[in-house]
Length: 262
Image 1 (cartoon, rainbow, N blue to C red):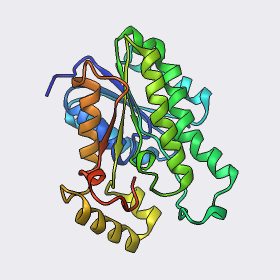
Image 2 (cartoon, rainbow, N blue to C red):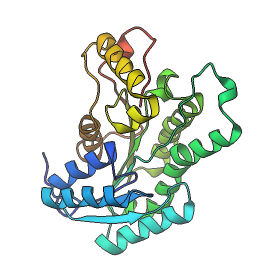
Image 3 (cartoon, rainbow, N blue to C red):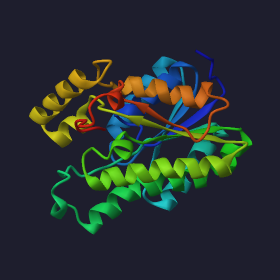
Image 4 (cartoon, one colour):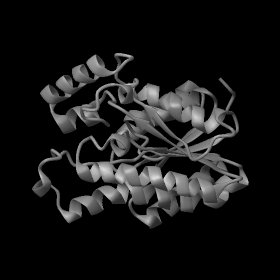
């Protein structure tokens, strides 16, 4: 793995799951990481301590990325703390678990709330960080979902928000070049509390077992698996932009009735 000493990464939703795993992976390679969180300060402090123990510097930047003013402040605090910005990982996400057939289970406000975090926030973060990323010929990774590709997942609103994020990644890739690369990773089933709590223990276990039985690789993702793909786009894919990578154990090759995804 390449040495990332002197590099700085800002990770939204960095206090748990994929965000935390990415922060620790990059820190282990010498990268300084700004860990954005909204409410979970104790969890973010734990991740920061683990990043420092792994060999990187860590900075906590609290803010609600659905708020444009917070996005600008989070970037400003990162620059104030580290002096520059090389990498942005738009990982913060939200959903509402509603069966797709239950059309009455989603309100217009649900769509607004989900799009605010999953689609609008990544745009706001890129806009706030643009000049800093261009100055460093940096890279952005949007953490999307196979839901936006398959049309499955926690709710139709979530599907729509991730499909929008995938399309926006293409548009931004055209206008951010040549200085900045931007790509998206689309995880399949990701093990962890976020999905477990949303689905409930029984449904979570059933979906995990179903996924493993259908996917050609017979596996589901851990947050660390997605972190590896994010790191690849940030540091190794130097001539790649506007790509959407499905990290789904090959489920797209199996029968189309995929279980709940991230």
